[in-house]
Length: 188
Image (cartoon, rainbow, N blue to C red):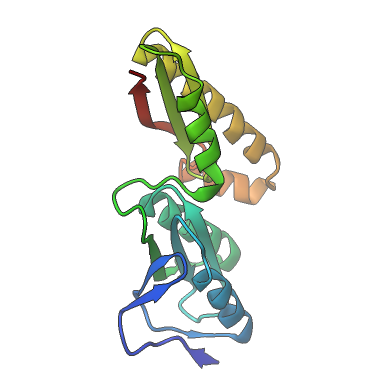
């Protein structure tokens, strides 16, 4: 067993700032997963572990800290079959704030805005598994938001279909397939 304790609570990493929340001894496999998690490049991230440090779940490259924590906790609790503890989180360096656009989504985000004509609206929606949907060239912001939600729901349905029954049920309970608009804009 390896203790994950650090001398400081905050640590600069490639993807931003890592904050350790708990000091839990991890198994060898847990320590390997912890290293992978800390090598995150961008977006928000969180890692949860079982109290015994044997099982865990983590997610990085997410749009918000809340979604990263909820998804990581749900994954951990499905894996461990017990309530899990927050081990640590990552906050992106370049996009501090409530919502960050991870690198994997930035091209779609820019495309939605770039392809929107003058005086028309674009919107971008996300779901709790880190997927998204976007819409552009609508006359009203409401239409753009509704279309982005529909496109996001299609993304969530594709992700949901890939999951096993147990994980799908846990993700349903955590509302990880729900979509919400994080950005809408009228192009000038």
